[in-house]
Image (tube, rainbow, N blue to C red):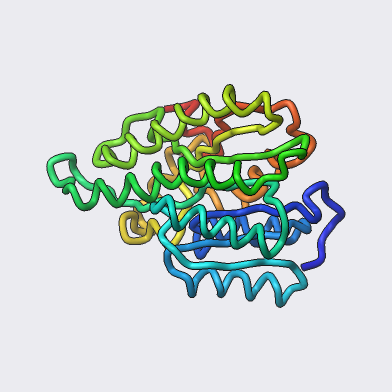
Length: 255
């Protein structure tokens, strides 16, 4: 994958849930900037497909399948990536499981699956990254995923909102805890971005209606998110730590 010279060239970046949607878009973009990307997804074939596309375009990618809601699986997966390509420079905690439903419909099975994918995986990812990071590296990066729903209550998103609010709070803690080690921890809050993960819950007509209420009058695109992630990983953001970057066209700001 040829692209402009970037301060991400050669950096090893691990991305969870990278087989489709926003994770896929981030992987493709970072690879185009020269990053060595490690992709993991519960659907192994999807991660392998994205890695194959990157490799075919001249980039470097590594793929694995597994449920990163499991501490053991996450640690083993990150260790395998580091064994193949060297110490990990950055972690993108992208994995999640999305269900929108009224609060009275939430089942124990659904909640457990959502917490494992969207919150427990963040803890395990950070632990695994700390183990596989070069201890002598001056700079490290962790980017977590929150959401505008953590700041603006939206009906029928109780479980998802609780998880994304927890991720936002955890990001603040990690920024203070890991900052002295040279690790910048930030979060992003992507707004209305049509992806395969959301098509079962939001119709094209609903997305069209959403766009009318966004100050920029359009829905987001995966590349909007990918470019923001690349910025946070770059030297241009070297004094940004503990930030929540809204990539939402103004949804949070305007309510």
